[in-house]
Image (cartoon, helix red, strand yellow):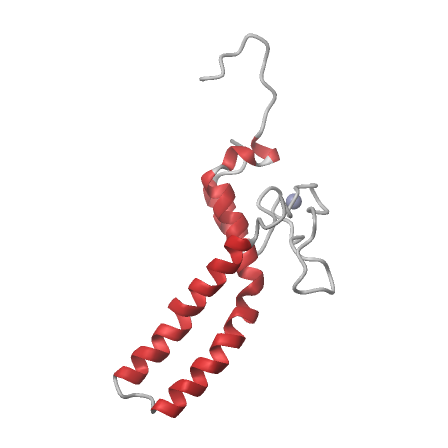
Length: 135
Ligand SMILES: [Zn+2]
């Protein structure tokens, strides 16, 4: 396997193409638009309609876990007043998903290829004549 799972994870966490490592996941000048394909290696990034619904779910989950739960805990421990907690929660409920949008798209793509690294074009190879598929 040419691209290891560790490389896929590092590339995913840094918003890079999981196949070649280039910073080509997003259209230049359009920070919230995912490129249809990597301009460096041609990896198809928009796999199918709705394939990034998981990224949206990931974004919501991370917003809750990394932002809203700590605000709630701070409120419950008495570190924040109710009004301050409500204002922070409202601002975070809108702001955190926007700030985390690019990472959620990249992380979702990373998750797919962490589970199925053999689907990366860099990891595919031609089957040799007479080769057993189980080897
Ligand atoms: Zn690429």
